[in-house]
Image (cartoon, rainbow, N blue to C red; front, top):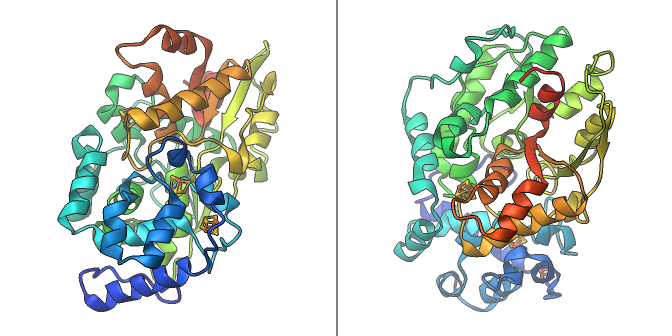
Length: 413
Ligand code: SF4
Ligand code: SF4
Ligand code: SF4
């Protein structure tokens, strides 16, 4: 399967058989040590166990295993992979990938559709937007936020910045009152400071949620093909990301679906460090500010382990002191929602736990580099019926996107 590009005609028996063989091969590596379940945040909530799933797949039919396990609850956070002794990039047990494969082959079943519907959030608006964009030959119109700025962008060139879903989140999650586009403005502004006029295009949704949350490979591939063609036509070689999911999707998922994928994919923290863009900048900040940093799974466990660059960037900021949380890097706790799916009373506890860890550091800010993590945490703090403990938490920590935080220090936003 990995040797060739992923086929998306998932209704054909040959394609399904191929995936089933891959699943069977993968679960054969498991020796039932239970480490995955010991660290899975959902197993602590009593709603899912990866080892039970693998056990059931070993001894029962896939249909029976699906009846006993709700695979749509999995957050694809990758905690299990960190501790599974049989996980390997190419072979072995890769539980998030195994679950994605199971979702792909079972998603048409009525019983699975019911589970997908139960995990749905925001009335499915994000999947609807992705599907509408995939089927519309016209590009979306999402760059209005640049109209009133002095930021310099290009339509063609070798270095691009991927805006992603920030303008859409600003409208759809307006209740949270987060200026998502400030992150984009800051990154473009910093690139301009470094003498770079990045290519910024009206690309479509990267497709992360429609792939991981809905297992809709057909829509995903349409989005990927459109975006790749757009950047190819603009002569782009390197694409800079400020969001974790876009980074992960382009770097690790697009190459599985796109022939001759050739782009260099970098996180903005890596790019700024490598090009020493912050080195000669003057920060007006004069008083110490304390921050802690939340590792998003799509940069860390599922993003090739990008842990150091965001921290090095924070350390470069004058008067900014980084205080680490108890669980960081590959052990970072999950924000509790994945692909806008599975937000419920159980996973709400995960948001609470992570926010509490951040508060326990005594830091003034928790910085994140994923607009979705930011949304889910902020949403917890802004619940309309805050109880006393939540009100306390809300007063003790501010949550910001890393790029937007740098912009704030520089008075960009
Ligand atoms: S990816 Fe996360 S939620 Fe899913 S089984 Fe692994 S640890 Fe549990
Ligand atoms: S950690 Fe790996 S080997 Fe151990 S039970 Fe889980 S999947 Fe199997
Ligand atoms: S936590 Fe996230 S998914 Fe759940 S309602 Fe809030 S923003 Fe939506």
